[in-house]
Image (cartoon, rainbow, N blue to C red):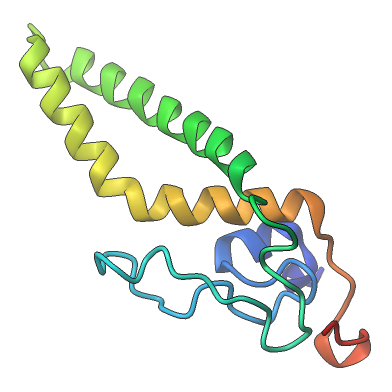
Length: 132
């Protein structure tokens, strides 16, 4: 089984959903304060637009919301197990630290998940027609 053909591979590697070869983000650095949000306009390999229409990634906000909700629940359960008495201050500080710590990851992951819903794998880059 060739894993590079799976949607899961495209999401984990943060690659183009159409050819699974081109990078969606020019910088691999997640924690650079100004570069983690910068996306390539199109795939360098197959020409797939990463923003097919204006406002395309508004739906990714809901994906990000779901990811952050899962993080909140995980932190709450972890604090409930590890700390005998949870204060509001401890909970708020811990949640804020986790949310801001995972912000670059949730930002990119939500966009990758969103585009993979609508753009499907078509094959190796040199076997599919280039979009312009």
